[in-house]
Amino acid sequence: MSDLQISLVIIGVVIIAGVVIFNRIQLARHHRRVQDAFRHEHDDVLLSDEHKPISVDERIEPQFGDEVPSIQDDATDLANVPASALSERHVANDQPVQKEPGVQKKAASVDSMINYIADIRSNSPIPHERLIDLLQQKFDYGKPVRWYGLQSEGQLWEEISLDTLSPRNTYIELKGCLQLVDRSGLVTEINLSRFRDMAEDFSVQIHAEVDCPDIADAYARAVDLDRFCADVDVIMGVNIISKDGGAFVGTKIRALAEASGFRLESEGVFRYRDSETNEVMFSLGNFESALFLPANMRTLTTRGITFLLDVPRVANGEKVFDQMVHIARLFSSTLNGLLVDDNRVPLSESGVKRSRQRLADIQTTMAAHSIAAGSETALKLFD
Image 1 (cartoon, rainbow, N blue to C red):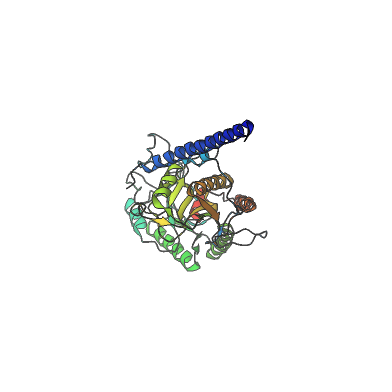
Image 2: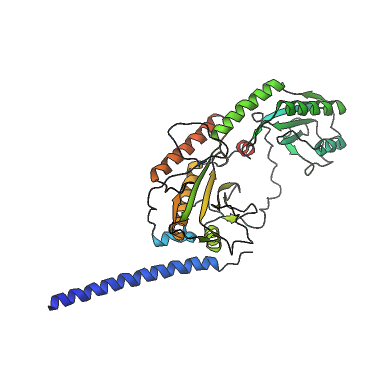
């Protein structure tokens, strides 16, 4: 063997050794970062080209492709997710946020679009005892009931309940609101009539006037509103399963979830909340039936996890969708998983684009009907 060949062999060995050493250093650094997270103690609907009505329980599952896109090692450190993708990241504190003293009370929204409203007007302050009797009634009209009071002309409407009612506050006008529709369906004509009769009886007792809308007209509005809600009530989902048929361990799932801004909540799912409104942006649950609970995360294993985005309840849906998909990809890379639909079919990148566009179409439709996704009205309708 010539000197040149020997030199080339030596150079090749040095290069290979350098690459191996570099990879081991990178892998060790990544493992240390993941282990740091563990040191903390812890107590779809597939899209089609046609816009057909979608039932409440349907989900849209973005599709990613036969292979999971490669992600650089340093990107898999969920504690260092790019700010551009996680600008709204938030880990909720155990302590509630304290409101600043002296802040003016915000006027309550009395929404005639989604409610049957009985308007009760009195020439004198309504007796406090009568209000207590009214609010103590066990309303059973199949849908939420809310009461709003006006203390005097020019004042702001405020929502009243047994918890907020005070003898110091006297009201001359009330609005009783029976919600027409929620996720379980629409109010019945019988319950509309019962609610109207209750409002009229109360008005007689306090010698007040009452204005109640026509029952048939209100029910017709409820039918139209329920049809609209059914068309836009969509939950988008992304699943991750193990590539090699193994299982994900609960401690690692929890560490990764909390490192990326989720918080484990009482219903057995992790939720990612908006830092300003505290509303849920998307959630992370078990692909299998077992719930994620503090008591079982140390011993739990699962063959998959699921990210869910509730389309009508989330403002800026496209941005939030991009966040969810980005985090799902990071989880998939870190857990050595594969993104799939509910039938465990690998997801394609073109499916992601179709799902994102479908989400945008849904939220545009909602805005055109004066019910913005993520608004107070939407949160009540899709509760």
